Length: 192
Ligand code: ZN
Image (tube, rainbow, N blue to C red; front, side, top):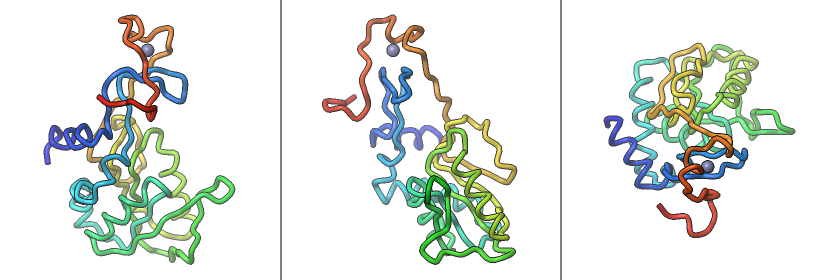
């Protein structure tokens, strides 16, 4: 799939909305993004995850790990395509932790998967979980890199889509200046 086809998947599932949005941070943006909207369709999750699975197909990987919750769908699907084990780390008292009997053994080769990366915080944290268990992180696969390629995990990494996040202070928002009403995403009647 080329970039235009990938972008169309996000647009047609309303994962990516274009307009004038009031974000929870209080800033305004011309885009609103919710990755779960595209991944709710297993066929699309399969298509997007295939880009990650294909990229890492020649790597030696034992296990795929994802940070809960957003990454789980991606990790599971990439692991299914690579026919590897799939586990996830979840927050306990705010800290990503292996639970449910999930284990990483010394020398285990691990691929980290995530749905959306902005600053990469959760992925960096999962990388630490893997390292602290004695495992080796061999790569990172993301559905969307919202840092537009700026986040560097220090291992081979791939995203199916890179995006620049553009936000404005309300006082400097060009869409406000045009008199376009700002919409709070998720509110009723939101359809573009
Ligand atoms: Zn605005």
